[in-house]
Amino acid sequence: MANIETSDAEKAAFFYGEMLGLELLMDHGWLRTYGSAETMRVQVSFASEGGSGTPVPDLSIEVDDVEAALARFKAAGIPVEYGPVSEPWGVRRFYVRDPFGKLVNILQHE
Image (tube, rainbow, N blue to C red):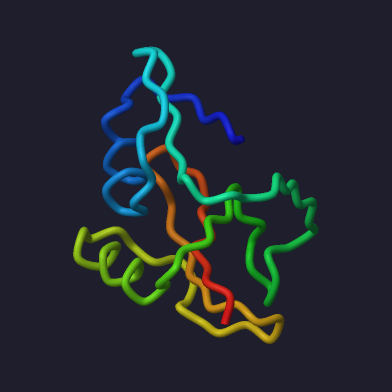
């Protein structure tokens, strides 16, 4: 679970809820947790680069349809900083920044 500091939880609701389709799982007012009912393994990656010479992203989020996610981000006017590209290690991905400045790697395994 990643924890990102913000004083504007509505920006998180838009980016992670509406744009990425994550569900609001918990809301304490001062803390909101977004997620999915899918069973996932906890992973923490340590990298000297993001692959293909890109910066290391702060978060990586796997989606079911990377092209549909890309279309949502473009329609919302959120700049794509890298991609979309099919990488040699078997993912199609693109990078965007969330409202808090975090570089987010949106990917789908091919």
